[in-house]
Every structure is written in C-alpha cells, then in structure tokens.
Length: 113
Image (cartoon, rainbow, N blue to C red):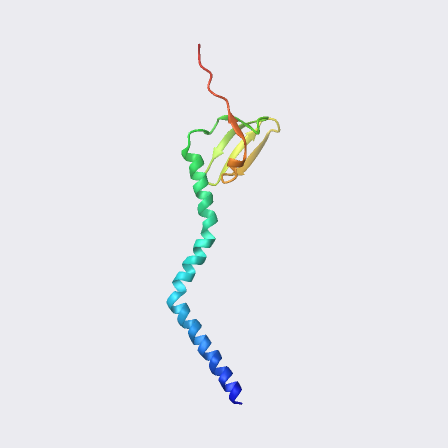
C-alpha cells in the first residue's frame, strides 16, 4: 500500500513540475514551434522576392526553358511564376523557390544598325 502511495505522490510531483515548466517556458516552446512551422513559408517568400526584385526576367519576356522550349512569362508573383509554352500551347506554373532549378535563357536585345 505504501508503494502505491509513493507512486501516486511521484506522479503528482511530476505533474506539478510539468505544469510549472509550461507556465514558465510555454511561450518559448510556442515560439520555437511557430518558427519551425514558418521557416519554409518564409524561405519561399524570400526566394520569390529575390526573383521579383531582379530585372533579369519580366512579364511578357520571351525565354527558353532548358534551351529548347520557347515560353513567355505571363505572370510573376511572390509565390509562383506562370509561363506560356508555345510548343504545347499550355501554361506552366512553377513555384519561385524551384525556378532556380530551371535553365532559363533570354535572348539579348537586338541593336538597330
């Protein structure tokens, strides 16, 4: 009987310890979980902003994807970019965090001589 009482007392002390830790450090645990959850979204946002800030590719530019697929940039957003593929007459949507994996080429402007 005394072992049961000791076990119950230990369980109660563990419960009290956990509740004290949550009361004192709950905000830190919540911030850590939120940071882990938001890391991916913030990384994708940053990649999209980098693509938009640059003036290398703009809406209505004619580009070549992987050197052989002629496409036009239809829309640029923070999260994704939309291309129109002339060969297939389809649109091609790619997230901006993956756009750096494509080999995108753009013709240089021709000079008037």
